[in-house]
Image: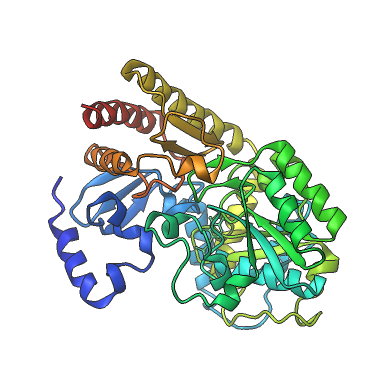
Length: 430
Ligand SMILES: *Cc1c(COP(=O)(O)O)cnc(C)c1O
């Protein structure tokens, strides 16, 4: 594989951008190689500056449920741009998208649009604190909720991959209000609540974690979490930035049949443009300015282009609920192919999957917590990643991430991936 142009661009990028990238995991650091510079995405494929083509399982880290540049989203953006790019004033589309979100996700009575998942989660926590008049909150080890200071404590995703789950620059004061519980372990939550009686504003969780690799919370765990939050008047926040509109029309909460008090969104909700949102119970959301005293604002929030892309994506989802069956079929096909390879190679790696998000862990035991996830052999993952890349398969350049399938992944793409998986696993285990 020729990567001449990418390598040169990366050298230049390193001079002007920290680590050469605008978001850490893009740098391929944990897999011991250097990043490819991408020029184009079409459907399930991406093409780099050297003309190499890949079947893409990153999908811009989650947003591309319909593959790259789907014609209906492209058209929506082009139509919107005719009228201007930003007004800083209300538009009709903002009302329509808010209404549509509340139709798709029944726990959402009111919603505020923001520009990223990070903004959504930090605003949700502030709102929960304002609503309860309490300061502490519980997060789970290995969950990632964006890069606000008080979330960067035992965080997942790039923070975990790069060995900085708790970041310098986060003050002791900021860290003090973040309480850490074990994923899928209700006793760890009960213990914290007991120790901090009437001081906890919120529990925030990825109901299906994607940022320590894919790890699903158990039904009983989520149910008990809901009960405890009700008893203790704690705001339960589902961070569905990744799972929202990915695992079902109504997100992970639809799969669990549990209504959180607040939900955060991002990724798919913007149709590939920078968007986030937080919403939930009217009583809580009315705390947000200007209807309430909790301040939250954004110069470009509800941006017309971003709303056009997001509205196109969500309308498509509303009118085509069959896509979740199609995604499940494609994803199951790939899972079965990979598991057949495991049998042939006599490997018993953990492959976790919920709908179209999955992670292959290089550990031969069930991964159902942060502690089991980090047992995965990340050196082996790095080798696997590079072998797959050579064979035209673009996976996340880090173990603790999800692989995403889009509606555009064809049987041919999946067969190519299964073949590459067999060859790569054989190669790295030789
Ligand atoms: C991606 C992600 C975020 C952060 O969203 P950004 O748009 O990157 O700020 C927060 N929570 C979860 C669960 C995510 O997957």
